Length: 191
Image 1 (cartoon, rainbow, N blue to C red):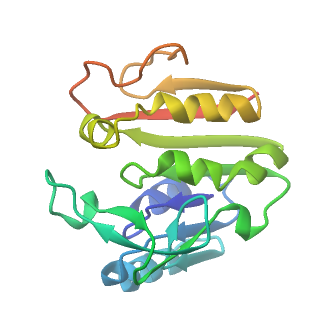
Image 2: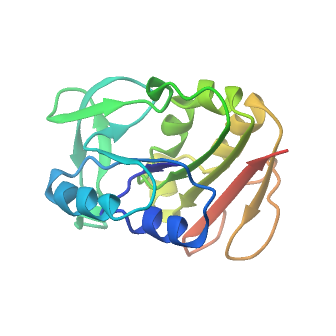
């Protein structure tokens, strides 16, 4: 399981407490202020785990974290590529090319870039489950609807999708956010 935007590892801990199917956790979190908590929480899991204090995207290099005008908490910061103190890596750089993979992405607008940096992994594994957040304010800031993530995944291989909050199966022909006001979570899986 890849946990992108892991914060202190709550998602990884919850998933591992509910299933025995996770064999390993790789958690990425660029905020060094929470790395000690993330490492501690991952060390409590019953599976091998690794905390990586780096951002995840579609390139390897550096960048910086910035606050959007509407959220000055650490949870709202997003990656800006270029000069900066934050190291950036890709999921493909981890080198997973078989078995089953789950990828959770909560990176405040960089979801499509994370998926592009995981294209080789997603294409090469047997089964894949992906979860990501769609936030109206993030979509507005980027001027990009998260439907682009679904379209990209469909370009790699067949996927099914569901919006967790409503149970609807979104079509890649329509925006995911549109007039929605709340945050949604999209789950995609291969078949």
